[in-house]
Length: 342
Image (cartoon, rainbow, N blue to C red):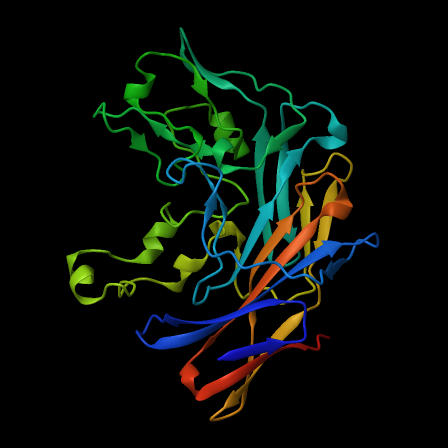
């Protein structure tokens, strides 16, 4: 399909296997919006490039995924991804403070951030050290619960598969020498207060989950000998479209966002109690022509909010819309158009 548009978008058409083994067409469109002095977000005239491969903070085996590639057939809702640094109120050093994101009537997700601290072994057992007062904590899975630790096999460490890049994960073998080890800096208040390094904690964060991590990996289905012999390179019969959602489960929003929603972030600015990011009132439709003519609405399935810069005017939004076309060979051309929103 030959695509066109008059809008400041990057766009692409490709074919992909669907869950019922049929070949479908996929159209994706991407735009970047920057915050103006009036607080609203406006599209940049130079659209962002598509991401064609995953990128990581470092080694993919041991570091967090920073950017998910854009090529996917569909998602089961909107991925809300946030690039942010937790910042203490009024830039005053603090041992901990809450961070949250909310959308009225759609979403509320929160966790706690803390300064660096260690688990320390004392006469009465393992105890948490007091967190160091800080003014900033990067919101990265590298500081959330997880990581690797010595196992029964000295040559093969045990891995916390929900977050191999984190800190705080421990095993009896890793605790045997009674050396201090880092505690997570991102997590739930109740789990921090439980003060037990032997109990696994929940992984919290705002960034994408790598395909190889749990629970996302479980959505990929069963890659066994039968799959190798009968289905490769197609996905297993028991895979679900949720595999393509990269956001952590609390930030997967279904039904999908439509535009005009206001995302409210707390705990990410020294100067503002809440940072608001109102999504542009943009909705897209694809007009297709060929053996027949048709219109199909595109779904806003990825929203990246970047509030990592303390200067509010440097905040940005990156939005990606997608639509899936059955029997795509019916159509020769497609034009991406903006729909009117009430």
